[in-house]
Image (tube, rainbow, N blue to C red):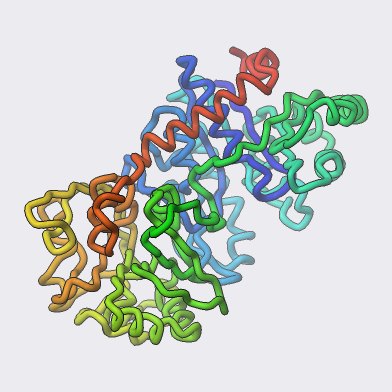
Length: 489
Protein backbone atom coordinates (compact mmCIF):
# COMPACT_ATOMS: atom_id res chain seq x y z
CA UNK A 1 0.00 0.00 0.00
CA UNK A 2 1.20 3.59 -0.64
CA UNK A 3 3.56 5.16 1.90
CA UNK A 4 4.58 8.81 1.88
CA UNK A 5 7.36 10.07 4.15
CA UNK A 6 7.64 13.62 5.47
CA UNK A 7 11.18 14.67 6.38
CA UNK A 8 12.46 18.00 7.64
CA UNK A 9 15.49 20.16 7.06
CA UNK A 10 15.93 20.54 10.84
CA UNK A 11 14.45 19.41 14.11
CA UNK A 12 11.20 21.30 14.76
CA UNK A 13 10.76 22.11 11.06
CA UNK A 14 7.12 21.05 11.41
CA UNK A 15 7.21 17.39 10.42
CA UNK A 16 4.84 16.36 13.21
CA UNK A 17 2.23 18.96 12.33
CA UNK A 18 2.46 18.29 8.59
CA UNK A 19 2.00 14.54 9.12
CA UNK A 20 -0.90 15.20 11.50
CA UNK A 21 -2.43 17.57 8.93
CA UNK A 22 -2.11 15.06 6.09
CA UNK A 23 -3.53 12.27 8.25
CA UNK A 24 -6.51 14.39 9.28
CA UNK A 25 -7.09 15.56 5.70
CA UNK A 26 -7.14 11.98 4.42
CA UNK A 27 -9.24 10.63 7.30
CA UNK A 28 -11.91 13.29 6.72
CA UNK A 29 -12.25 11.94 3.18
CA UNK A 30 -12.76 8.39 4.41
CA UNK A 31 -9.26 7.17 3.49
CA UNK A 32 -7.91 4.38 5.69
CA UNK A 33 -4.69 6.00 6.89
CA UNK A 34 -2.20 5.45 9.73
CA UNK A 35 0.84 7.41 10.97
CA UNK A 36 4.29 5.90 11.28
CA UNK A 37 7.51 7.14 12.86
CA UNK A 38 10.36 4.63 12.48
CA UNK A 39 12.45 6.10 15.28
CA UNK A 40 11.68 8.78 17.81
CA UNK A 41 13.69 10.30 20.64
CA UNK A 42 11.39 11.87 23.19
CA UNK A 43 10.41 11.79 26.84
CA UNK A 44 6.77 12.51 26.02
CA UNK A 45 5.05 9.22 25.35
CA UNK A 46 1.63 7.58 25.37
CA UNK A 47 0.26 4.17 26.30
CA UNK A 48 -1.03 2.21 23.31
CA UNK A 49 -4.12 0.09 22.87
CA UNK A 50 -1.93 -3.03 22.80
CA UNK A 51 -0.27 -2.15 26.11
CA UNK A 52 2.88 -0.63 24.67
CA UNK A 53 4.48 2.81 24.56
CA UNK A 54 5.05 5.23 21.67
CA UNK A 55 5.95 8.88 21.24
CA UNK A 56 3.23 11.34 22.18
CA UNK A 57 3.40 13.10 18.82
CA UNK A 58 2.63 9.84 16.99
CA UNK A 59 -0.31 9.25 19.32
CA UNK A 60 -1.60 12.69 18.29
CA UNK A 61 -1.32 11.66 14.64
CA UNK A 62 -3.26 8.48 15.42
CA UNK A 63 -6.01 10.68 16.86
CA UNK A 64 -5.96 12.65 13.60
CA UNK A 65 -6.66 9.36 11.79
CA UNK A 66 -9.47 8.45 14.19
CA UNK A 67 -7.39 5.58 15.59
CA UNK A 68 -6.22 4.34 18.96
CA UNK A 69 -2.42 4.55 19.15
CA UNK A 70 -0.65 1.24 18.48
CA UNK A 71 2.96 0.24 19.13
CA UNK A 72 3.48 -0.48 15.41
CA UNK A 73 3.12 3.24 14.74
CA UNK A 74 6.45 4.04 16.45
CA UNK A 75 8.54 0.86 16.61
CA UNK A 76 11.70 2.46 18.02
CA UNK A 77 11.38 4.95 20.88
CA UNK A 78 14.49 6.30 22.60
CA UNK A 79 13.96 7.88 26.02
CA UNK A 80 17.11 9.78 27.09
CA UNK A 81 18.36 9.07 30.60
CA UNK A 82 21.62 11.01 30.29
CA UNK A 83 23.45 13.05 27.66
CA UNK A 84 24.91 9.84 26.19
CA UNK A 85 22.42 7.09 27.08
CA UNK A 86 18.78 6.19 26.61
CA UNK A 87 16.19 3.54 27.31
CA UNK A 88 15.45 1.69 24.07
CA UNK A 89 11.83 0.67 23.46
CA UNK A 90 11.10 -1.70 20.56
CA UNK A 91 7.53 -2.12 19.32
CA UNK A 92 6.20 -0.73 22.58
CA UNK A 93 8.30 -2.80 25.00
CA UNK A 94 11.46 -1.94 26.92
CA UNK A 95 14.47 -3.58 25.24
CA UNK A 96 17.10 -2.17 27.59
CA UNK A 97 19.44 0.77 28.21
CA UNK A 98 22.18 1.67 25.71
CA UNK A 99 24.74 4.39 25.34
CA UNK A 100 24.92 6.28 22.06
CA UNK A 101 27.75 4.24 20.55
CA UNK A 102 26.14 0.90 21.43
CA UNK A 103 22.83 2.00 19.95
CA UNK A 104 24.50 3.24 16.77
CA UNK A 105 25.93 -0.25 16.31
CA UNK A 106 22.56 -1.82 17.16
CA UNK A 107 20.56 0.14 14.57
CA UNK A 108 20.87 -2.59 11.94
CA UNK A 109 19.00 -4.89 14.35
CA UNK A 110 16.48 -2.20 15.23
CA UNK A 111 15.72 -1.85 11.52
CA UNK A 112 14.12 -5.30 11.64
CA UNK A 113 11.53 -3.99 14.12
CA UNK A 114 10.99 -0.91 11.98
CA UNK A 115 10.25 -2.88 8.83
CA UNK A 116 8.10 -5.46 10.63
CA UNK A 117 5.92 -2.69 12.10
CA UNK A 118 5.67 -0.87 8.76
CA UNK A 119 4.59 -4.05 7.00
CA UNK A 120 2.00 -4.71 9.69
CA UNK A 121 0.52 -1.23 9.21
CA UNK A 122 0.65 -1.54 5.43
CA UNK A 123 -1.40 -4.72 5.68
CA UNK A 124 -4.08 -2.98 7.77
CA UNK A 125 -4.35 0.45 6.12
CA UNK A 126 -4.59 1.83 2.60
CA UNK A 127 -2.12 4.67 3.20
CA UNK A 128 0.77 5.15 5.65
CA UNK A 129 2.13 8.65 6.33
CA UNK A 130 5.62 8.34 7.82
CA UNK A 131 7.54 10.99 9.73
CA UNK A 132 11.29 11.38 9.76
CA UNK A 133 13.41 12.52 12.70
CA UNK A 134 15.72 15.51 12.76
CA UNK A 135 17.30 15.96 9.34
CA UNK A 136 18.24 13.40 6.66
CA UNK A 137 21.45 15.34 6.00
CA UNK A 138 23.20 14.66 9.32
CA UNK A 139 26.41 13.28 7.84
CA UNK A 140 27.57 11.61 11.05
CA UNK A 141 24.30 9.70 11.44
CA UNK A 142 23.71 8.52 7.89
CA UNK A 143 25.41 5.13 8.33
CA UNK A 144 22.76 2.52 9.24
CA UNK A 145 20.10 5.24 9.26
CA UNK A 146 16.63 3.96 10.15
CA UNK A 147 14.89 7.26 10.89
CA UNK A 148 14.94 9.10 7.55
CA UNK A 149 16.24 8.11 4.13
CA UNK A 150 17.38 4.72 5.40
CA UNK A 151 13.76 3.81 5.95
CA UNK A 152 12.55 5.57 2.79
CA UNK A 153 15.02 3.58 0.69
CA UNK A 154 14.06 0.28 2.36
CA UNK A 155 10.34 0.98 1.93
CA UNK A 156 10.86 2.51 -1.53
CA UNK A 157 8.54 5.42 -0.77
CA UNK A 158 8.50 9.06 -1.95
CA UNK A 159 9.59 11.85 0.40
CA UNK A 160 8.37 15.40 0.92
CA UNK A 161 10.92 17.76 2.45
CA UNK A 162 9.64 20.40 4.91
CA UNK A 163 11.47 23.64 5.69
CA UNK A 164 10.57 26.18 8.38
CA UNK A 165 10.62 29.67 6.89
CA UNK A 166 9.99 31.26 10.30
CA UNK A 167 13.55 30.31 11.30
CA UNK A 168 14.96 32.10 8.21
CA UNK A 169 17.10 30.74 5.43
CA UNK A 170 14.49 28.30 4.17
CA UNK A 171 15.89 28.12 0.61
CA UNK A 172 19.35 27.31 1.95
CA UNK A 173 17.75 24.69 4.22
CA UNK A 174 16.00 22.95 1.35
CA UNK A 175 18.71 23.20 -1.32
CA UNK A 176 21.48 22.37 1.15
CA UNK A 177 19.65 19.30 2.46
CA UNK A 178 19.04 18.07 -1.05
CA UNK A 179 22.71 18.55 -1.95
CA UNK A 180 23.90 16.46 1.01
CA UNK A 181 21.90 13.31 0.30
CA UNK A 182 22.64 10.61 -2.26
CA UNK A 183 21.46 10.56 -5.87
CA UNK A 184 18.85 7.88 -5.19
CA UNK A 185 17.58 9.83 -2.17
CA UNK A 186 17.37 12.99 -4.23
CA UNK A 187 15.39 11.08 -6.85
CA UNK A 188 12.80 9.91 -4.32
CA UNK A 189 12.37 13.44 -2.92
CA UNK A 190 9.15 14.37 -4.66
CA UNK A 191 9.07 18.03 -3.66
CA UNK A 192 8.96 20.62 -0.92
CA UNK A 193 6.59 22.10 1.64
CA UNK A 194 7.39 25.45 3.21
CA UNK A 195 6.02 25.77 6.72
CA UNK A 196 5.12 28.64 9.10
CA UNK A 197 4.97 31.49 6.58
CA UNK A 198 3.82 34.94 7.66
CA UNK A 199 3.15 37.80 5.27
CA UNK A 200 2.12 38.35 1.65
CA UNK A 201 2.59 35.17 -0.39
CA UNK A 202 3.20 37.30 -3.51
CA UNK A 203 6.55 38.36 -2.06
CA UNK A 204 7.57 34.71 -1.71
CA UNK A 205 6.52 33.51 -5.16
CA UNK A 206 9.74 34.51 -7.00
CA UNK A 207 11.67 32.38 -4.52
CA UNK A 208 9.32 29.45 -5.06
CA UNK A 209 9.76 29.70 -8.82
CA UNK A 210 13.55 29.77 -8.41
CA UNK A 211 13.48 26.75 -6.06
CA UNK A 212 11.46 24.66 -8.50
CA UNK A 213 13.66 25.68 -11.45
CA UNK A 214 16.94 25.20 -9.56
CA UNK A 215 16.11 21.74 -8.16
CA UNK A 216 13.68 20.45 -10.78
CA UNK A 217 11.26 19.61 -7.98
CA UNK A 218 7.87 21.20 -7.30
CA UNK A 219 6.81 23.14 -4.24
CA UNK A 220 3.66 21.41 -3.01
CA UNK A 221 2.60 24.52 -1.14
CA UNK A 222 3.22 27.02 1.64
CA UNK A 223 1.59 26.50 5.02
CA UNK A 224 0.90 29.61 7.13
CA UNK A 225 2.03 30.31 10.66
CA UNK A 226 -0.99 29.33 12.76
CA UNK A 227 -1.28 31.62 15.76
CA UNK A 228 -2.62 30.00 18.91
CA UNK A 229 -2.01 26.45 17.67
CA UNK A 230 -1.76 24.18 20.73
CA UNK A 231 -1.03 20.53 20.01
CA UNK A 232 1.01 17.87 21.75
CA UNK A 233 4.67 18.84 21.75
CA UNK A 234 7.24 16.15 21.01
CA UNK A 235 10.16 17.51 23.03
CA UNK A 236 10.27 21.16 24.00
CA UNK A 237 8.27 22.55 26.90
CA UNK A 238 5.85 25.01 25.33
CA UNK A 239 5.36 28.48 26.71
CA UNK A 240 2.42 28.98 29.02
CA UNK A 241 -0.79 30.50 27.67
CA UNK A 242 -2.67 33.62 28.70
CA UNK A 243 -4.80 33.94 31.80
CA UNK A 244 -7.28 36.35 33.32
CA UNK A 245 -6.71 38.66 36.27
CA UNK A 246 -6.68 36.92 39.63
CA UNK A 247 -5.84 33.55 38.09
CA UNK A 248 -4.55 30.64 40.14
CA UNK A 249 -0.74 30.68 40.03
CA UNK A 250 0.64 27.23 39.15
CA UNK A 251 4.42 26.72 39.11
CA UNK A 252 6.19 23.73 37.55
CA UNK A 253 9.96 23.09 37.65
CA UNK A 254 11.43 22.13 34.27
CA UNK A 255 13.41 19.09 35.36
CA UNK A 256 16.43 18.09 33.23
CA UNK A 257 14.66 14.79 32.39
CA UNK A 258 11.08 16.02 32.60
CA UNK A 259 8.71 13.54 30.99
CA UNK A 260 5.16 13.78 29.72
CA UNK A 261 4.96 17.54 30.18
CA UNK A 262 1.91 17.37 27.92
CA UNK A 263 0.14 16.78 31.24
CA UNK A 264 0.08 20.57 31.57
CA UNK A 265 -1.41 21.49 28.20
CA UNK A 266 -4.97 21.70 29.62
CA UNK A 267 -3.69 24.12 32.26
CA UNK A 268 -2.07 26.28 29.56
CA UNK A 269 -5.52 26.62 28.00
CA UNK A 270 -7.40 27.28 31.24
CA UNK A 271 -8.32 30.99 31.52
CA UNK A 272 -8.33 30.77 35.32
CA UNK A 273 -4.76 29.45 35.54
CA UNK A 274 -1.48 31.34 35.32
CA UNK A 275 0.95 28.52 34.49
CA UNK A 276 4.66 29.23 34.97
CA UNK A 277 7.52 26.87 34.04
CA UNK A 278 10.69 27.49 36.04
CA UNK A 279 13.96 26.48 34.43
CA UNK A 280 17.48 26.13 35.84
CA UNK A 281 18.80 29.04 37.94
CA UNK A 282 15.53 30.95 37.57
CA UNK A 283 13.83 32.57 40.55
CA UNK A 284 11.09 30.41 42.04
CA UNK A 285 8.03 32.68 42.23
CA UNK A 286 5.24 32.59 44.82
CA UNK A 287 2.44 30.21 43.84
CA UNK A 288 -0.90 28.81 44.84
CA UNK A 289 0.06 25.36 43.56
CA UNK A 290 3.46 23.77 42.89
CA UNK A 291 3.42 20.67 40.70
CA UNK A 292 6.42 18.34 40.54
CA UNK A 293 6.17 16.70 37.08
CA UNK A 294 7.12 13.28 35.79
CA UNK A 295 10.76 12.35 35.29
CA UNK A 296 12.65 9.76 33.27
CA UNK A 297 15.44 9.85 35.85
CA UNK A 298 13.81 10.47 39.22
CA UNK A 299 16.93 10.30 41.41
CA UNK A 300 18.94 12.55 39.07
CA UNK A 301 16.16 15.13 38.88
CA UNK A 302 15.62 14.95 42.64
CA UNK A 303 19.26 15.90 43.14
CA UNK A 304 18.80 18.75 40.66
CA UNK A 305 15.78 20.04 42.65
CA UNK A 306 17.90 20.13 45.78
CA UNK A 307 20.72 21.97 44.03
CA UNK A 308 18.24 24.54 42.69
CA UNK A 309 16.80 25.28 46.14
CA UNK A 310 13.38 23.76 45.58
CA UNK A 311 13.11 21.94 48.97
CA UNK A 312 13.45 25.26 50.83
CA UNK A 313 11.03 26.97 48.44
CA UNK A 314 8.50 24.15 48.89
CA UNK A 315 8.73 24.33 52.70
CA UNK A 316 8.10 28.08 52.58
CA UNK A 317 5.27 27.53 50.13
CA UNK A 318 3.62 25.03 52.47
CA UNK A 319 4.06 27.29 55.53
CA UNK A 320 2.12 29.98 53.71
CA UNK A 321 -0.71 27.58 52.90
CA UNK A 322 0.16 26.68 49.31
CA UNK A 323 -0.74 23.31 47.80
CA UNK A 324 1.70 20.74 46.41
CA UNK A 325 1.06 18.00 43.84
CA UNK A 326 3.47 15.36 42.55
CA UNK A 327 2.86 13.42 39.33
CA UNK A 328 4.57 10.06 38.77
CA UNK A 329 8.29 10.76 39.29
CA UNK A 330 7.31 13.96 41.09
CA UNK A 331 5.13 11.86 43.42
CA UNK A 332 8.06 9.52 44.11
CA UNK A 333 10.21 12.50 45.09
CA UNK A 334 7.80 13.40 47.91
CA UNK A 335 8.69 10.28 49.85
CA UNK A 336 11.51 9.39 52.23
CA UNK A 337 13.72 7.66 49.68
CA UNK A 338 13.99 6.49 46.06
CA UNK A 339 15.87 3.20 45.69
CA UNK A 340 17.30 1.82 42.45
CA UNK A 341 19.09 -1.42 43.38
CA UNK A 342 19.49 -2.55 39.75
CA UNK A 343 20.41 0.80 38.22
CA UNK A 344 17.31 0.92 35.99
CA UNK A 345 17.50 4.71 35.74
CA UNK A 346 21.27 5.08 35.93
CA UNK A 347 23.68 4.30 38.73
CA UNK A 348 22.82 1.76 41.42
CA UNK A 349 21.98 3.44 44.72
CA UNK A 350 19.48 5.31 46.87
CA UNK A 351 18.55 8.99 47.01
CA UNK A 352 16.90 10.71 49.95
CA UNK A 353 13.55 12.18 49.01
CA UNK A 354 11.85 15.38 50.15
CA UNK A 355 10.45 13.47 53.16
CA UNK A 356 6.98 14.98 52.86
CA UNK A 357 5.21 11.58 52.74
CA UNK A 358 5.90 8.46 54.79
CA UNK A 359 6.69 6.21 51.84
CA UNK A 360 9.58 4.67 49.95
CA UNK A 361 9.84 3.98 46.20
CA UNK A 362 11.86 1.12 44.75
CA UNK A 363 12.63 0.93 41.03
CA UNK A 364 11.81 -2.53 39.69
CA UNK A 365 11.94 -4.05 36.21
CA UNK A 366 8.69 -4.42 34.33
CA UNK A 367 7.30 -1.00 33.47
CA UNK A 368 3.66 -0.37 34.38
CA UNK A 369 1.88 0.69 31.19
CA UNK A 370 -1.88 1.00 31.33
CA UNK A 371 -4.74 3.33 30.60
CA UNK A 372 -6.89 4.02 33.65
CA UNK A 373 -10.24 5.43 34.66
CA UNK A 374 -11.55 6.24 38.11
CA UNK A 375 -12.59 9.01 40.45
CA UNK A 376 -10.80 11.46 42.69
CA UNK A 377 -10.69 10.93 46.43
CA UNK A 378 -13.12 13.00 48.57
CA UNK A 379 -10.02 14.67 50.09
CA UNK A 380 -9.48 16.59 46.82
CA UNK A 381 -13.10 17.22 45.85
CA UNK A 382 -15.93 19.17 47.37
CA UNK A 383 -18.16 17.27 49.75
CA UNK A 384 -20.59 15.06 47.87
CA UNK A 385 -19.02 15.77 44.47
CA UNK A 386 -17.78 12.85 42.36
CA UNK A 387 -15.08 13.82 39.89
CA UNK A 388 -14.30 11.19 37.28
CA UNK A 389 -10.83 11.04 35.80
CA UNK A 390 -9.00 9.27 33.00
CA UNK A 391 -5.31 8.94 32.22
CA UNK A 392 -2.48 6.49 31.97
CA UNK A 393 0.30 5.02 34.10
CA UNK A 394 3.88 4.72 32.88
CA UNK A 395 6.45 3.95 35.55
CA UNK A 396 8.92 1.42 36.94
CA UNK A 397 8.66 2.39 40.60
CA UNK A 398 6.70 0.56 43.28
CA UNK A 399 5.79 2.79 46.22
CA UNK A 400 4.97 1.55 49.72
CA UNK A 401 4.28 3.26 53.04
CA UNK A 402 1.66 4.52 55.45
CA UNK A 403 1.04 7.65 53.33
CA UNK A 404 -0.84 5.47 50.82
CA UNK A 405 -3.59 4.86 53.39
CA UNK A 406 -5.12 8.16 52.21
CA UNK A 407 -5.25 7.69 48.39
CA UNK A 408 -5.51 10.45 45.83
CA UNK A 409 -7.86 8.47 43.59
CA UNK A 410 -9.65 5.19 43.14
CA UNK A 411 -8.68 3.66 39.79
CA UNK A 412 -10.45 0.59 38.45
CA UNK A 413 -11.27 -0.45 42.05
CA UNK A 414 -7.71 0.06 43.35
CA UNK A 415 -6.19 3.01 45.23
CA UNK A 416 -3.65 5.36 43.68
CA UNK A 417 -1.40 7.99 45.15
CA UNK A 418 -1.63 9.79 48.46
CA UNK A 419 -3.08 12.87 50.15
CA UNK A 420 -1.56 14.35 53.32
CA UNK A 421 -3.58 14.38 56.52
CA UNK A 422 -3.94 18.17 56.35
CA UNK A 423 -5.03 18.00 52.69
CA UNK A 424 -2.23 20.33 51.62
CA UNK A 425 -0.17 17.83 49.60
CA UNK A 426 -1.10 15.13 47.10
CA UNK A 427 0.56 12.77 44.67
CA UNK A 428 -0.46 10.38 41.93
CA UNK A 429 1.03 8.00 39.39
CA UNK A 430 -1.53 9.07 36.75
CA UNK A 431 -0.51 11.13 33.73
CA UNK A 432 -3.16 13.06 31.84
CA UNK A 433 -5.19 13.75 34.98
CA UNK A 434 -6.08 17.28 33.78
CA UNK A 435 -7.51 16.08 30.44
CA UNK A 436 -10.95 15.38 31.94
CA UNK A 437 -12.63 18.75 32.70
CA UNK A 438 -14.38 17.57 35.88
CA UNK A 439 -11.15 16.21 37.37
CA UNK A 440 -9.17 19.28 36.27
CA UNK A 441 -11.59 21.70 37.90
CA UNK A 442 -11.79 19.60 41.07
CA UNK A 443 -8.00 19.56 41.49
CA UNK A 444 -7.71 23.28 40.75
CA UNK A 445 -10.47 24.10 43.24
CA UNK A 446 -8.62 21.98 45.84
CA UNK A 447 -5.60 24.16 45.06
CA UNK A 448 -7.55 27.35 45.63
CA UNK A 449 -9.27 28.24 42.35
CA UNK A 450 -12.53 30.10 42.83
CA UNK A 451 -15.34 27.74 41.80
CA UNK A 452 -16.76 30.50 39.59
CA UNK A 453 -13.54 30.34 37.56
CA UNK A 454 -13.68 26.54 37.17
CA UNK A 455 -13.98 26.47 33.38
CA UNK A 456 -11.64 23.77 32.19
CA UNK A 457 -11.29 23.09 28.48
CA UNK A 458 -12.44 19.77 27.05
CA UNK A 459 -8.93 18.94 25.96
CA UNK A 460 -9.80 16.04 23.69
CA UNK A 461 -12.28 18.19 21.76
CA UNK A 462 -9.71 20.97 21.62
CA UNK A 463 -7.10 18.62 20.12
CA UNK A 464 -9.56 17.55 17.42
CA UNK A 465 -10.37 21.19 16.63
CA UNK A 466 -6.65 21.94 16.25
CA UNK A 467 -6.22 18.94 13.96
CA UNK A 468 -9.11 20.18 11.82
CA UNK A 469 -7.38 23.56 11.58
CA UNK A 470 -4.33 21.78 10.20
CA UNK A 471 -6.38 19.74 7.72
CA UNK A 472 -8.11 22.90 6.53
CA UNK A 473 -4.69 24.34 5.65
CA UNK A 474 -3.86 21.26 3.58
CA UNK A 475 -7.00 21.80 1.55
CA UNK A 476 -6.44 25.54 1.16
CA UNK A 477 -2.66 25.81 0.75
CA UNK A 478 -1.24 22.58 -0.70
CA UNK A 479 -1.52 21.08 -4.17
CA UNK A 480 -3.99 18.36 -3.24
CA UNK A 481 -4.20 16.98 -6.78
CA UNK A 482 -0.44 16.41 -6.75
CA UNK A 483 -0.72 14.86 -3.26
CA UNK A 484 -3.42 12.47 -4.43
CA UNK A 485 -1.31 11.43 -7.38
CA UNK A 486 1.68 10.83 -5.09
CA UNK A 487 -0.50 8.66 -2.83
CA UNK A 488 -2.00 6.80 -5.79
CA UNK A 489 -5.52 7.88 -4.76
